[in-house]
Length: 220
Length: 401
Ligand SMILES: Nc1ncnc2c1ncn2[C@@H]1O[C@H](COP(=O)(O)OP(=O)(O)O)[C@@H](O)[C@H]1O
Ligand SMILES: [Mg+2]
Image 1 (cartoon, rainbow over the protein chains, first blue to last red):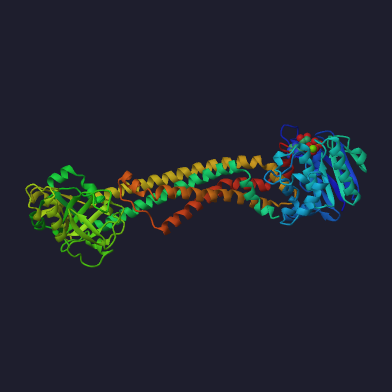
Image 2: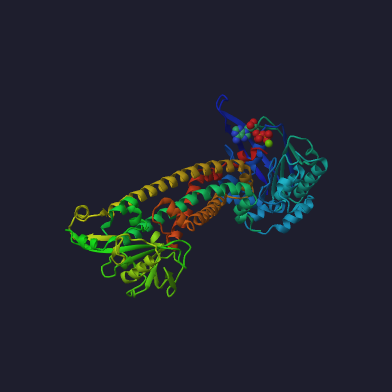
């Protein structure tokens, strides 16, 4: 499944600026092809998260449309879109993203659990993969930043989604973990997934098929 | 893994301190609602049973009794005093214009009897003329009392067929009365013949000294019903004027006094409930607002991974209702523990008749308390729950990572 943003742009209301309108992402077309790892690189505040969220179905663009193959993402009703995200999109949020009242295993199995499906096996497998298998029963507030991040990545990948978004996925990881994360993303791309990573660091470059630069809302 | 459906419970169990605090607020609310409702209803029932029994328009007691005793507590609480007059007063009173039915009663004090820890009060009535005690006894015992048979109040531990001994004289318990919530529950009732025997033996024991009165002709009070159409106040003052050495008081004025008192108390309880409701409402609203702000990011994560607005709202809602309902049950249970076993203590504290409500009424109040808690929870979180479901996922994800 490939993701196409057509003439998408995002404006925020922001009081105090001249017209009270702040353009976070200027109108652009953007393609995340399947089977490839795409990277958007840019400074903090340049609009990377904004464009990623628009493509991931959690932020409606001010103008333009997002297509997943032939499906117009934002024409769906909320229930449909939610289920669509659940089935087809893996998302690694920036920062900490654990559900505090669930243990690590339950957090990783979350995409299954939200629809009352059994994901324990798949979750266990993913945890093995990212070296957090022995943390199953631990609550997230006991984990280190790196462990939390690996948990978030395991959760995003647990359903083997066709499209994966990762917002600064290696921000607080050491080199070893960074390698593991990009290795896994690379592997998913090789298996046919469309992968988009946004980062302000350059460590993603060596794994990328396409690299875009983002500067003050302009994609280059 | 049925995680999503269990999420509200998990959230509560795995955050015990937070849950306990919210629970306490809900419990406080239901404690007030349930406890207040039970108390007011207890007082109402006590009042109703009092009116049932009172049945006399005028109470006539010896003059010196009126000075020494609180007549109100004789009438309303069924407490007996020890004062006596000659039974010829009964005929004098009966002859007064406007007096319809009249009957006499005798109060005797007994030392601790075999049955009871406290002093028992003996009350003699005249089965031939009685219209106040007998109709009430009839509810528990339909036969005529034979000589040396007595009827006991509900607080007296003896049962039918037991023998109680007063002043070395044996009496047989013929029946036990239903609870009234007044001092009558600690009384022993006997017919005129039996009470004469007991009076005589008490004189023999040098208890109950009757001074100048012949023990065979003593009465403690006379109860009067006026004729149809006669004015109770006029008849009472006619008795005061024409019969020497007695004081006649109108009983219904006391009942209306206590009724005013009661409506004052129920009014107070209603204000208290409203106050606590508003307080709980505000506290819950602040608590839920804080709670939900703090968890914005968590909710956004759930949305990202596929929870729709509607199911997220449902989940948050269940969590809040769960808290409120558990709190409501805990609060009501606490209120039940406080009010029901201590209704006796509460009654003497308030100096008003009080009868615990029946199980049906209690369950009704429990339902009421639970509903009010649920309403407080729902109303106070309404805005917050809709805010959660409408929240911008992307914006929420930006917060304090
Ligand atoms: N909801 C919002 N309201 C107003 N301004 C926003 C909002 N979200 C993001 N912005 C602004 O848009 C710009 C781009 O943000 P973001 O996409 O998070 O940048 P990046 O991820 O590259 O650091 C920033 O200047 C940010 O302050
Ligand atoms: Mg960002």
